Length: 381
Image 1 (spheres, helix red, strand yellow):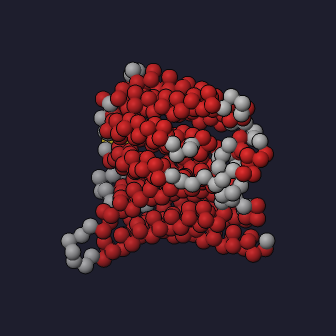
Image 2 (cartoon, rainbow, N blue to C red):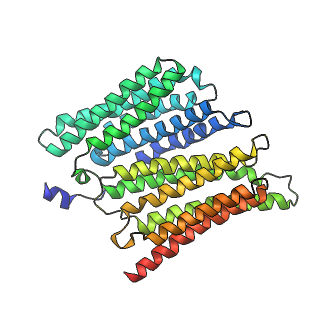
């Protein structure tokens, strides 16, 4: 077993994985479009719950597939076939993601359940080829059970009332996360190529940023004549996106120990919420230009989304290099920045020009705290 570990070659991101990711670029846009239907000055609770569910479900689907490829993938013809089947089914999920989602819940959940079964079958195949490899066999067996268990809940939800369907769907997502965590053994890091996994998740984050870049293009719309307001707001929106990307890029390039012995589970779960926060930020930036949306809700949505993003981004500290562990002063500085950000946003809630400028200041303040804190730690070590 030890010889296999030392001889294990670094797993490369395959071409088919990038092709597979393209369908998720499309689905991200479909998910975000759910929040463009307003009820009483803001997004209704039911709409937001469906949006959150669709976003988390799609990220989880991607995660299940990525874990399988990371642990057992061989870039074989069989993998191509299974991935293309999933891509086909994901189109039905994308087309079912719409404002009148209650009319498409059955289609959505049947496609979702079939995707889970698709991945489970791949693990089932591994069971017949790894009977002599105790750990690999155990991981494949547990993941197969997890996927089938979640698929059963999803299929039941497909033929339930709207309320029961939504509740069961959240139960399905939660059970998938919980069972996956408990299905991994203490030494399961042997199965994971963390370098490959971190690169795959980084690529998902990148095309999530791509959707954000597309979304802020509306800030640049004008009549071709000089418009000071257009220049100002477009610049502020661009700086926010650039600052968020710089923060993630700095953490990924300089802090994450991509060659570390991690099982990848916590890293993946944290990224589920990072990506969810980025989707919310994308929508909140679009909201800032919508006059029919009430001021207070869209301001709260932007603030909550930005803070959620940085909380989980900084939560990646457990995967940092040994000489880059954050100190209490680092945590306190970020908490102070967040508190000041919240206060200023409340005080200037009726002035969008100041609001967006304060958002820019917050984004770059956190980035600079991150940059100089870890630079100081690196110099000491």
